[in-house]
Image 1 (cartoon, one colour):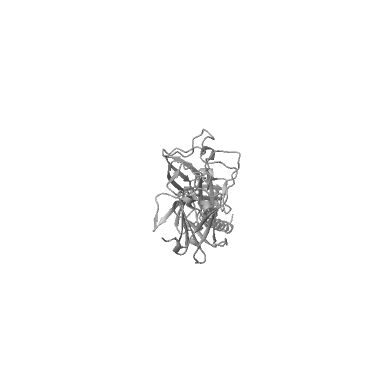
Image 2: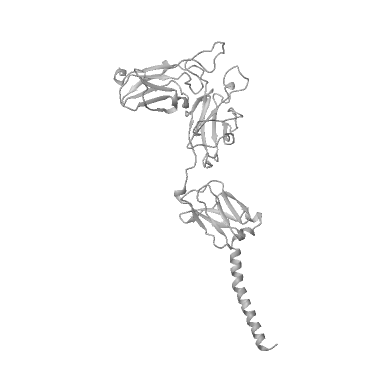
Length: 372
Protein backbone atom coordinates (compact mmCIF):
# COMPACT_ATOMS: atom_id res chain seq x y z
CA UNK A 1 0.00 0.00 0.00
CA UNK A 2 1.33 3.43 -0.93
CA UNK A 3 1.83 6.01 1.71
CA UNK A 4 -0.86 8.34 0.36
CA UNK A 5 -3.80 5.91 0.64
CA UNK A 6 -2.48 4.75 4.03
CA UNK A 7 -2.38 8.30 5.30
CA UNK A 8 -5.91 8.86 4.05
CA UNK A 9 -7.12 5.71 5.82
CA UNK A 10 -5.46 6.81 9.05
CA UNK A 11 -7.09 10.20 8.74
CA UNK A 12 -10.53 8.60 8.31
CA UNK A 13 -9.89 6.38 11.31
CA UNK A 14 -8.91 9.37 13.45
CA UNK A 15 -12.07 11.20 12.37
CA UNK A 16 -14.18 8.16 13.25
CA UNK A 17 -12.61 7.90 16.70
CA UNK A 18 -13.13 11.59 17.32
CA UNK A 19 -16.74 11.22 16.19
CA UNK A 20 -17.26 8.35 18.61
CA UNK A 21 -15.70 10.32 21.43
CA UNK A 22 -18.14 13.12 20.73
CA UNK A 23 -21.19 10.92 20.09
CA UNK A 24 -20.89 8.40 22.92
CA UNK A 25 -21.19 10.97 25.75
CA UNK A 26 -24.14 12.53 23.95
CA UNK A 27 -25.79 9.12 23.61
CA UNK A 28 -25.08 8.34 27.24
CA UNK A 29 -26.49 11.70 28.26
CA UNK A 30 -29.59 11.08 26.17
CA UNK A 31 -29.99 7.64 27.75
CA UNK A 32 -29.89 9.28 31.19
CA UNK A 33 -32.32 12.07 30.37
CA UNK A 34 -35.58 12.19 32.29
CA UNK A 35 -38.29 14.82 32.37
CA UNK A 36 -39.91 15.60 35.70
CA UNK A 37 -43.55 16.67 35.54
CA UNK A 38 -44.51 18.42 38.75
CA UNK A 39 -48.08 18.22 40.06
CA UNK A 40 -50.39 21.04 39.05
CA UNK A 41 -52.80 20.24 41.88
CA UNK A 42 -52.28 18.72 45.35
CA UNK A 43 -54.00 15.46 44.41
CA UNK A 44 -51.84 14.80 41.32
CA UNK A 45 -48.78 12.50 41.43
CA UNK A 46 -45.18 13.47 40.68
CA UNK A 47 -44.19 12.04 37.29
CA UNK A 48 -40.74 11.24 35.83
CA UNK A 49 -40.50 10.10 32.21
CA UNK A 50 -37.48 9.09 30.13
CA UNK A 51 -35.11 6.37 28.96
CA UNK A 52 -33.47 6.23 32.39
CA UNK A 53 -36.81 5.11 33.84
CA UNK A 54 -37.35 2.42 31.21
CA UNK A 55 -34.11 0.69 32.20
CA UNK A 56 -35.16 0.29 35.84
CA UNK A 57 -36.29 -3.04 37.22
CA UNK A 58 -39.58 -3.10 39.14
CA UNK A 59 -37.86 -3.46 42.55
CA UNK A 60 -35.50 -0.61 41.72
CA UNK A 61 -38.34 1.57 40.44
CA UNK A 62 -40.24 1.12 43.71
CA UNK A 63 -37.50 3.02 45.59
CA UNK A 64 -36.24 5.37 42.89
CA UNK A 65 -38.17 8.50 43.84
CA UNK A 66 -38.39 10.08 47.29
CA UNK A 67 -39.89 13.45 48.15
CA UNK A 68 -39.00 15.66 51.11
CA UNK A 69 -40.55 18.83 52.48
CA UNK A 70 -38.17 21.81 52.48
CA UNK A 71 -38.86 24.30 55.27
CA UNK A 72 -36.81 27.48 55.45
CA UNK A 73 -34.10 25.93 53.30
CA UNK A 74 -33.81 22.78 55.43
CA UNK A 75 -34.87 19.39 54.09
CA UNK A 76 -37.04 17.29 56.39
CA UNK A 77 -35.52 14.17 57.90
CA UNK A 78 -38.35 11.84 56.93
CA UNK A 79 -39.65 11.63 53.36
CA UNK A 80 -43.23 12.23 52.31
CA UNK A 81 -45.25 9.02 52.56
CA UNK A 82 -46.19 7.53 49.20
CA UNK A 83 -45.41 4.84 46.65
CA UNK A 84 -43.72 4.61 43.24
CA UNK A 85 -45.48 3.07 40.25
CA UNK A 86 -43.66 2.42 36.95
CA UNK A 87 -45.32 1.96 33.58
CA UNK A 88 -42.77 1.66 30.78
CA UNK A 89 -40.71 4.86 30.74
CA UNK A 90 -43.08 6.61 33.17
CA UNK A 91 -42.47 6.60 36.93
CA UNK A 92 -45.09 8.10 39.24
CA UNK A 93 -44.76 9.01 42.90
CA UNK A 94 -48.25 8.89 44.44
CA UNK A 95 -48.34 10.58 47.87
CA UNK A 96 -50.33 8.94 50.65
CA UNK A 97 -51.90 12.36 51.26
CA UNK A 98 -52.24 15.20 48.74
CA UNK A 99 -49.31 17.60 48.33
CA UNK A 100 -49.81 20.99 49.98
CA UNK A 101 -49.93 24.05 47.77
CA UNK A 102 -47.31 26.69 48.53
CA UNK A 103 -44.94 24.17 50.16
CA UNK A 104 -41.52 23.50 48.62
CA UNK A 105 -40.57 19.88 48.00
CA UNK A 106 -37.21 18.33 47.10
CA UNK A 107 -36.98 15.23 44.93
CA UNK A 108 -34.44 12.50 45.67
CA UNK A 109 -33.43 10.03 42.96
CA UNK A 110 -32.46 6.41 43.65
CA UNK A 111 -29.28 4.70 42.46
CA UNK A 112 -30.76 3.84 39.09
CA UNK A 113 -31.57 7.50 38.43
CA UNK A 114 -28.53 9.07 40.08
CA UNK A 115 -27.21 10.32 36.77
CA UNK A 116 -30.58 11.45 35.40
CA UNK A 117 -30.22 14.62 33.38
CA UNK A 118 -32.81 17.31 32.84
CA UNK A 119 -34.82 16.64 35.99
CA UNK A 120 -35.19 19.53 38.45
CA UNK A 121 -34.61 18.72 42.10
CA UNK A 122 -37.31 20.91 43.69
CA UNK A 123 -40.89 21.91 42.97
CA UNK A 124 -43.71 23.91 44.54
CA UNK A 125 -47.40 23.72 43.71
CA UNK A 126 -48.62 27.30 43.18
CA UNK A 127 -51.14 28.50 45.70
CA UNK A 128 -53.53 29.51 42.96
CA UNK A 129 -54.03 25.86 42.04
CA UNK A 130 -54.87 24.84 45.59
CA UNK A 131 -58.36 23.46 46.16
CA UNK A 132 -59.81 23.08 49.65
CA UNK A 133 -59.89 19.57 51.04
CA UNK A 134 -63.18 18.27 52.48
CA UNK A 135 -63.62 18.40 56.25
CA UNK A 136 -66.27 17.48 58.79
CA UNK A 137 -67.87 20.80 59.71
CA UNK A 138 -69.99 19.48 62.56
CA UNK A 139 -71.50 16.38 64.12
CA UNK A 140 -74.94 16.38 65.74
CA UNK A 141 -76.18 15.92 68.41
CA UNK A 142 -73.44 18.29 69.56
CA UNK A 143 -73.84 17.75 73.32
CA UNK A 144 -71.22 15.82 75.27
CA UNK A 145 -73.89 13.85 77.18
CA UNK A 146 -76.53 11.99 75.17
CA UNK A 147 -79.52 9.83 76.16
CA UNK A 148 -79.14 6.07 75.86
CA UNK A 149 -81.89 5.95 73.22
CA UNK A 150 -80.42 8.61 70.94
CA UNK A 151 -81.83 7.83 67.50
CA UNK A 152 -79.69 9.68 64.94
CA UNK A 153 -76.32 11.24 64.28
CA UNK A 154 -75.77 13.81 61.54
CA UNK A 155 -72.37 14.24 59.85
CA UNK A 156 -72.07 17.63 58.17
CA UNK A 157 -69.31 18.07 55.56
CA UNK A 158 -67.85 21.14 53.90
CA UNK A 159 -68.73 19.85 50.42
CA UNK A 160 -70.63 16.99 48.73
CA UNK A 161 -69.06 13.64 49.58
CA UNK A 162 -68.81 10.29 47.79
CA UNK A 163 -71.76 8.09 48.65
CA UNK A 164 -72.04 4.40 49.56
CA UNK A 165 -68.59 4.28 51.21
CA UNK A 166 -69.38 5.48 54.74
CA UNK A 167 -68.90 2.06 56.38
CA UNK A 168 -65.23 2.11 55.34
CA UNK A 169 -64.58 5.31 57.32
CA UNK A 170 -66.96 5.18 60.32
CA UNK A 171 -66.38 3.45 63.63
CA UNK A 172 -68.04 3.63 67.05
CA UNK A 173 -65.80 2.56 69.94
CA UNK A 174 -66.57 2.00 73.60
CA UNK A 175 -64.43 3.33 76.45
CA UNK A 176 -62.20 0.22 76.29
CA UNK A 177 -61.41 1.00 72.65
CA UNK A 178 -63.46 -1.92 71.30
CA UNK A 179 -65.55 -1.38 68.19
CA UNK A 180 -69.31 -1.52 68.76
CA UNK A 181 -70.73 -4.11 66.35
CA UNK A 182 -73.25 -2.81 63.80
CA UNK A 183 -74.51 0.20 65.77
CA UNK A 184 -76.10 1.86 62.71
CA UNK A 185 -78.64 0.52 60.25
CA UNK A 186 -76.95 -0.42 56.97
CA UNK A 187 -79.26 0.97 54.30
CA UNK A 188 -78.86 -0.03 50.67
CA UNK A 189 -79.03 3.69 49.90
CA UNK A 190 -77.35 5.92 52.46
CA UNK A 191 -79.38 8.77 53.97
CA UNK A 192 -77.81 11.84 52.34
CA UNK A 193 -79.24 15.34 52.12
CA UNK A 194 -80.05 16.45 48.54
CA UNK A 195 -76.85 18.53 48.37
CA UNK A 196 -74.67 15.59 49.49
CA UNK A 197 -73.22 17.46 52.47
CA UNK A 198 -75.09 15.81 55.35
CA UNK A 199 -75.23 12.10 56.15
CA UNK A 200 -77.77 10.70 58.62
CA UNK A 201 -76.67 7.74 60.73
CA UNK A 202 -79.69 5.94 62.19
CA UNK A 203 -79.25 3.74 65.24
CA UNK A 204 -81.40 0.62 65.15
CA UNK A 205 -84.82 1.58 66.62
CA UNK A 206 -85.55 -2.10 67.38
CA UNK A 207 -82.68 -2.04 69.88
CA UNK A 208 -83.96 1.24 71.35
CA UNK A 209 -87.66 0.44 71.79
CA UNK A 210 -88.34 -1.89 74.71
CA UNK A 211 -89.82 -5.31 74.08
CA UNK A 212 -89.01 -5.44 70.35
CA UNK A 213 -85.78 -7.43 70.52
CA UNK A 214 -83.50 -8.99 73.11
CA UNK A 215 -80.47 -7.26 71.59
CA UNK A 216 -78.84 -4.68 73.85
CA UNK A 217 -78.98 -1.02 72.80
CA UNK A 218 -76.04 0.24 70.78
CA UNK A 219 -75.40 2.83 73.50
CA UNK A 220 -75.35 1.88 77.18
CA UNK A 221 -76.17 4.36 79.96
CA UNK A 222 -73.16 5.16 82.14
CA UNK A 223 -70.63 4.37 79.38
CA UNK A 224 -68.42 6.60 77.26
CA UNK A 225 -68.02 6.33 73.50
CA UNK A 226 -66.01 7.72 70.62
CA UNK A 227 -67.44 8.17 67.13
CA UNK A 228 -64.58 8.20 64.60
CA UNK A 229 -64.59 9.46 61.01
CA UNK A 230 -61.32 8.36 59.38
CA UNK A 231 -59.28 10.43 56.96
CA UNK A 232 -59.23 9.44 53.31
CA UNK A 233 -62.99 9.70 52.73
CA UNK A 234 -63.19 11.16 49.20
CA UNK A 235 -65.45 14.00 48.23
CA UNK A 236 -67.74 13.78 45.20
CA UNK A 237 -64.95 15.37 43.13
CA UNK A 238 -62.41 12.80 44.37
CA UNK A 239 -60.50 14.92 46.91
CA UNK A 240 -59.87 12.85 50.08
CA UNK A 241 -60.21 14.13 53.62
CA UNK A 242 -56.74 14.83 55.02
CA UNK A 243 -57.80 14.95 58.66
CA UNK A 244 -60.20 12.66 60.46
CA UNK A 245 -62.79 13.71 63.03
CA UNK A 246 -63.90 12.27 66.35
CA UNK A 247 -66.62 12.93 68.90
CA UNK A 248 -66.29 11.86 72.52
CA UNK A 249 -69.50 11.61 74.52
CA UNK A 250 -71.01 10.08 77.65
CA UNK A 251 -74.35 8.27 77.70
CA UNK A 252 -77.05 9.08 80.26
CA UNK A 253 -80.44 7.50 81.03
CA UNK A 254 -82.94 7.09 78.20
CA UNK A 255 -85.49 9.84 77.47
CA UNK A 256 -88.88 8.19 76.84
CA UNK A 257 -91.29 11.07 77.44
CA UNK A 258 -93.19 12.74 74.58
CA UNK A 259 -92.36 16.33 73.77
CA UNK A 260 -94.45 18.87 75.67
CA UNK A 261 -94.42 22.44 74.40
CA UNK A 262 -95.77 23.61 77.75
CA UNK A 263 -92.32 22.90 79.20
CA UNK A 264 -90.67 25.36 76.82
CA UNK A 265 -89.97 29.04 77.35
CA UNK A 266 -91.17 31.21 74.44
CA UNK A 267 -90.26 34.90 74.34
CA UNK A 268 -89.57 37.77 72.00
CA UNK A 269 -86.28 39.48 72.73
CA UNK A 270 -85.42 43.03 71.58
CA UNK A 271 -84.45 43.12 67.94
CA UNK A 272 -87.03 41.63 67.63
CA UNK A 273 -85.96 37.99 67.92
CA UNK A 274 -88.27 35.07 68.62
CA UNK A 275 -86.62 32.77 71.18
CA UNK A 276 -87.68 29.26 72.22
CA UNK A 277 -85.83 27.47 75.02
CA UNK A 278 -86.45 23.71 75.00
CA UNK A 279 -86.42 21.39 78.01
CA UNK A 280 -84.16 18.89 76.16
CA UNK A 281 -82.07 18.68 72.96
CA UNK A 282 -84.15 18.51 69.78
CA UNK A 283 -83.29 16.91 66.45
CA UNK A 284 -80.89 19.22 64.61
CA UNK A 285 -82.12 18.58 61.06
CA UNK A 286 -85.80 18.91 61.99
CA UNK A 287 -85.16 22.22 63.72
CA UNK A 288 -84.08 23.60 60.35
CA UNK A 289 -87.48 23.24 58.68
CA UNK A 290 -90.16 22.10 61.12
CA UNK A 291 -90.85 25.49 62.72
CA UNK A 292 -92.57 28.31 60.83
CA UNK A 293 -93.28 31.86 61.99
CA UNK A 294 -96.35 33.87 60.98
CA UNK A 295 -97.92 37.13 62.09
CA UNK A 296 -101.16 37.52 64.02
CA UNK A 297 -103.12 37.19 60.76
CA UNK A 298 -101.44 33.91 59.78
CA UNK A 299 -99.22 35.43 57.08
CA UNK A 300 -95.71 33.89 56.83
CA UNK A 301 -92.94 36.07 58.23
CA UNK A 302 -89.68 35.89 56.24
CA UNK A 303 -86.48 35.77 58.24
CA UNK A 304 -83.54 33.64 59.33
CA UNK A 305 -83.29 31.04 62.09
CA UNK A 306 -80.45 29.40 63.97
CA UNK A 307 -80.11 26.61 66.49
CA UNK A 308 -78.55 27.26 69.88
CA UNK A 309 -75.87 25.36 71.80
CA UNK A 310 -76.63 21.67 72.26
CA UNK A 311 -79.81 22.05 70.13
CA UNK A 312 -81.62 23.22 73.27
CA UNK A 313 -82.85 26.52 71.85
CA UNK A 314 -84.04 28.11 68.59
CA UNK A 315 -84.03 31.73 67.48
CA UNK A 316 -85.77 33.46 64.61
CA UNK A 317 -84.95 36.96 63.38
CA UNK A 318 -87.55 38.54 61.04
CA UNK A 319 -86.20 40.08 57.83
CA UNK A 320 -88.03 43.30 58.64
CA UNK A 321 -87.70 44.65 62.16
CA UNK A 322 -91.25 44.77 63.39
CA UNK A 323 -92.68 43.82 66.76
CA UNK A 324 -95.06 40.88 67.24
CA UNK A 325 -97.21 39.24 68.20
CA UNK A 326 -96.07 36.18 66.28
CA UNK A 327 -97.28 32.62 65.95
CA UNK A 328 -94.79 29.74 65.76
CA UNK A 329 -96.22 26.64 64.08
CA UNK A 330 -94.63 23.34 65.09
CA UNK A 331 -94.84 20.50 62.57
CA UNK A 332 -96.29 17.28 64.06
CA UNK A 333 -93.11 15.34 63.18
CA UNK A 334 -90.82 17.63 65.18
CA UNK A 335 -88.71 15.34 67.40
CA UNK A 336 -86.11 15.35 70.11
CA UNK A 337 -82.82 13.46 69.65
CA UNK A 338 -84.57 10.23 70.74
CA UNK A 339 -87.41 10.40 68.20
CA UNK A 340 -90.06 11.52 70.71
CA UNK A 341 -92.70 13.78 69.15
CA UNK A 342 -95.21 16.28 70.46
CA UNK A 343 -97.75 14.19 72.34
CA UNK A 344 -96.18 10.85 71.33
CA UNK A 345 -93.09 9.05 72.60
CA UNK A 346 -91.15 6.82 70.23
CA UNK A 347 -91.32 3.99 72.77
CA UNK A 348 -95.12 3.79 73.11
CA UNK A 349 -97.58 0.92 73.24
CA UNK A 350 -98.95 -0.13 69.87
CA UNK A 351 -102.70 0.11 69.33
CA UNK A 352 -105.11 -0.47 66.48
CA UNK A 353 -106.03 3.21 66.43
CA UNK A 354 -103.91 5.49 64.26
CA UNK A 355 -103.23 8.68 66.14
CA UNK A 356 -103.29 11.73 63.90
CA UNK A 357 -100.81 14.25 65.26
CA UNK A 358 -101.60 17.83 64.34
CA UNK A 359 -99.42 20.93 64.11
CA UNK A 360 -99.18 23.00 67.29
CA UNK A 361 -99.01 26.77 67.53
CA UNK A 362 -97.15 28.86 70.09
CA UNK A 363 -98.07 32.50 70.66
CA UNK A 364 -95.15 34.89 71.02
CA UNK A 365 -95.95 38.20 72.68
CA UNK A 366 -94.06 41.41 71.85
CA UNK A 367 -91.03 42.09 73.96
CA UNK A 368 -92.75 44.90 75.89
CA UNK A 369 -95.77 42.76 76.69
CA UNK A 370 -93.62 39.81 77.69
CA UNK A 371 -91.70 41.90 80.22
CA UNK A 372 -93.23 41.65 83.73
